[in-house]
Length: 45
Image 1 (tube, rainbow, N blue to C red):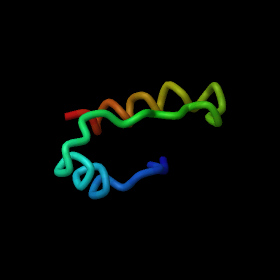
Image 2: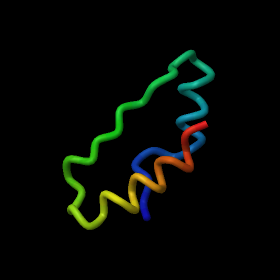
Image 3: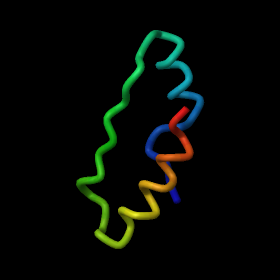
Image 4: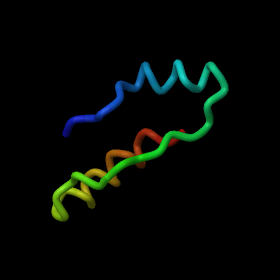
């Protein structure tokens, strides 16, 4: 699966004080939403 934002970029935002990123699933096919949510859950720390 492809992540739209690299994990390193997420860490840079966190270092700047950003605590929330908005996930946009609007363009995902319905059958991809479940796996995508599982992938997103692994990124939440």
